[in-house]
Length: 213
Image (cartoon, rainbow, N blue to C red; front, side):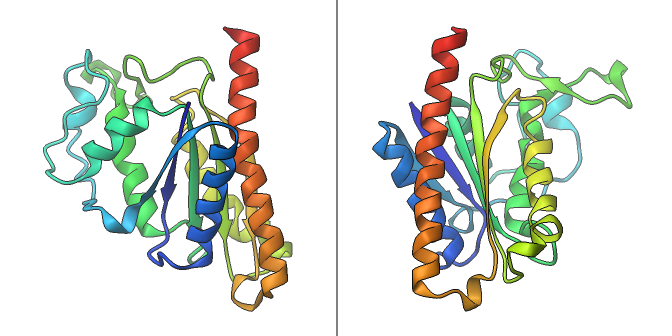
């Protein structure tokens, strides 16, 4: 089993990435292979909205994008993974532009014919797998835990919207508020929650597959 993280913070030594790494350690403790895609390290260009990737070649698993960058490399691993951890700080009550740019480029996993104008595209071959894959989310913010609905929920919704056509359920959501003023002791407790999130993701996937295969 492979779990990959899509980490949307530009701060590689920040708390969001530390929580993400800890979640992957939890996944590894349950027997999963893991990889952390720290998106700031990759060349991810803006979607041009041309439609090339989702309007052509319906037989492909990943639509062909004319932009030459690292997105195809990430998507190649994405479609092979069994589970996902999406993580981002909340900047101005939303996920970072970094991870949002990547989410927009995931449209290459869909197809729709030109006759379907005005309709939502469908998953490409091999993408939707009857909820056999799962995802969990991590969001950090300066605003404390009482403001999760304001700071965290918009990020969760952005992640989940891109999982609908892929038939991927959400397992856990970890909101870590007040990060800039958090004591080391408090953060250690959040790191344990992140570890448990990663471990539970693997165990939930494994259990679901055993019951539904």
